[in-house]
Image 1 (cartoon, rainbow, N blue to C red):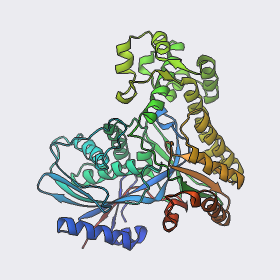
Image 2: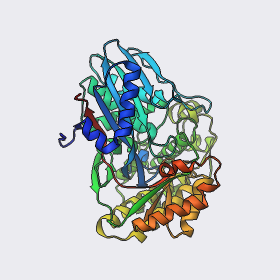
Image 3: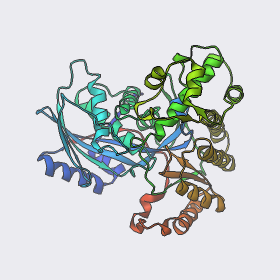
Image 4: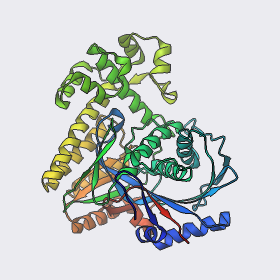
Length: 468
C-alpha cells in the first residue's frame, strides 16, 4: 500500500477483498464483467460517515467531529474510448445511465421529487471536468455497489459524489490530493441544489483508521482525535428516510443562518453583504464563542422574522432579497426563525470544542454523553430537524441510560449513541430491537445487523488497482 502525506492511498485488489469482504468485491466484479464484457482496471472505495457531534455547523464555518464507518460506496471502473459515461448499479432498483462526456447535465429535483441516483455521480464527474484545462479525454465504464443506507444521515449521497470525483480524477490523471478532491467534491454537490458545508466530503477523503477527525475550514484541515478506549459507538437507523435534495428543509436552515449572520453583521456596522457565515463574522468581531453567543442573544430578539422584517432591516428591495439572499427552492419562504438557528449553531460549536477536550484528555464517557444529549435537544427544539422516530429512539436510549443524538441532517435517518463497553452496547442493541424495531412493519430481522450496529473509525477514500 502506497501512501504519501496528503495523497489518496493506492492498493491492490487483494487488499480491497481483505477490508471489504471477498463476496461483495466478487459480486461487483461479476456485475461489471457481465455488463461491459471486460474486467475493471481499478476500484474506488469511499466510506460513509457518522458525525459524533457538530450538526448543521459546517456550512456556518465551524469545526465538526465525524468519523468514517465500514459501510461504503464501492466502484469498479475502466476507461472507455467512446467518450461516453456508462454507469450501472449492482442494485437493480437503480436504473443505468449512458451519456456523452461532452454534455454532462445534473438534473436538479423539483416539487419534492428525489433525484435519480446517478445525478449524484454526475455531480462528481462534472466537478472534475470543470477543473480540466483541456476537458475530459476518456469516457468511463462504471459499476456501483453501495451498502450505506440511503437517506439515513450516513452520507450515502456525498460518498457517491466523492467516489465519482475520485475515479474521474484518476482516469483523467488530474489529482490524487485528498484536500483538493474534498474541496471539489463539496462544491460540485451543490450542482444538485444542496447547500452543504463540506463535512461529508472532508471525512470521506481525510479519514484515518482508528480516529475521529476534527475538521476545520479555511483552510480545510483534519486533525486526528483519539477517542476513549472504552467508548463504543452504536448507530441505529430509524428507517425513516430523509433526502436533503428533495425538499427545501435543509436549504431553509442554511438560508436562515446566513440571514441571521447578515443581520448581526449589519448591527455591528460591518459590510454585511460580504459576511454570510457565523465563523467569519465572529473572527471579524474578534470575540470568543461565548461572547458571540451573548451578542447574538442580544440582537436576535424575535422568535419569528417575516420577509418584510428582514428586507427593512437590511434595507434591500424584494428583488435583491429573493435573488441574492435566497436559493431557488427557498424563494417561497415568508417566515424565518433566525434566533433559534443562530443559538443552536453557536452553542453546538461550543459543544464540539468541549467534546474534543474531554475525548483527548480523559475517558469520561458520561461527560461525552451529556454533550450528545444536549446536542440532540438543541437539534430538536432550536433547529427543528429531528423526527418523531428519532426522538423515540433517543427516549428509549435515555431510559436505558445511554446517551444518543440524531446524526446527519435529520428529518429521519439515524441516531448515534455512546456506550462504555462492548457488553453494554450489545445489551443496548437488543433493547432497541425489542422496544423500537420489532414494532415497525418494514423491519426485516435478517437485515438487523445493517440497521443497528456498533462501529469504529475507518480509513478514508482509497484506490485499488486490478492487477489481474
